[in-house]
Length: 242
Length: 308
Image (cartoon, rainbow over all chains, first blue to last red; front, side, top):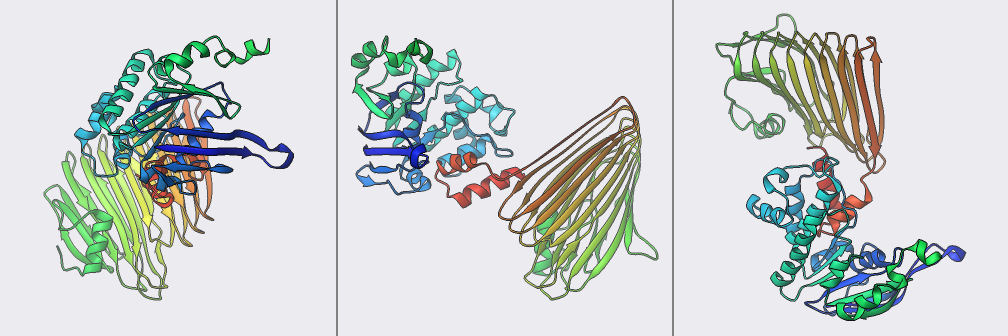
């Protein structure tokens, strides 16, 4: 279980200070599939990075399975069982797909196990296992490899920052199947996804709508979705300005 | 293995992956003395007269054979310049493994300057692997100044892998290559300097024949207060294509100067250079740390991959 208690995150100093997350509290129960949504710039990605420990909150506490992890490093949180798929996956010269999956799994990873993870994300393992994670891979390929690293990690809490961005239509069905498999296979595991996609929102146990760094609403997909569609949160900025 | 002590065996393993005498032709030089030699029907090795070094003769049409010529220096105070010439016949396909390891536990400098000249015959195909390595805790410096000259006949190809990852205090590397028509040269250099080390690497590649090609790629890492200079010039004197790339990671207070340069003397010479120097990207560290690695472990993985 993940508990965010009164999280505030400010950037800048003095008069230039801006509040990105404003006294936000949220509990993510074990076994839940939670989608955090909201307009661009609402603080969703920042919140995901705070959960992982990439950013430190200005105030507030974070508890993971009852343990206070607020001051814990990124590495220690990862070891404790939190994993994170970046919105924009990173390229590495010389590091191969197999190396990254091995590091993610934390042990010597057989080629056949590595291949299973790649097949799961719809990549032909034979073609990718020895590829370098460099600019020869497309954005969509990188995104799938990023998701495969989380499959290899098998942690109790997995946070995905816009996993659907750059993924084509075919893979989209696959992506939803992956999330469902992850929930089934890792006991008591929870998944947090930052997304705008209606089809991902549709399969959520709980939707958290964020705006201006605060939670506007939480509830089930049935409760929230009808309200969300047609509100300002679902309308793009140009329309809102009219 | 030949009669080598533990330190010498360790150096041999580092520079040439050798734990036993290799198959095929070899010449082992240990502390300026000949420590072992084998020749084959196709590959002959002869000591030079009047100067240190060897001549290696590879008969035309020799295929799937190898030559190992590792050098080990494990005594402080040795300073030597060695001349090795390779005469490679037409249509050969061979692997040449060189390399030098210095272990210096003393207070005097130990220095090995290897001057290698390759005369590569028509349509011959060579793979050349050279590793440099230093160890030992003495105050004396470990110095390696290799000079490599490559003269390539029509249709020949040469792939050079040159690696210096650890322990060499000072190195000045000079590589000169001249290519005739349809010759192809690929150079892959890997260099890491640490402590107060200093390394320069200088390439002068002349593409003299039609359709000759050269690809000179260097990846390097400068840590601590070490310094590096990379200077690569490709000259196109005919319709040809050349590419040089220097990609470096800089850490701590390391300093790197990259000077790629091109000279086109023919309107159909196509030459490209690239150079990039930067520290390890923050998002690379973050990604590996989200997998449970510490920052130091993440750095090590990134560098090992980069220098692969």
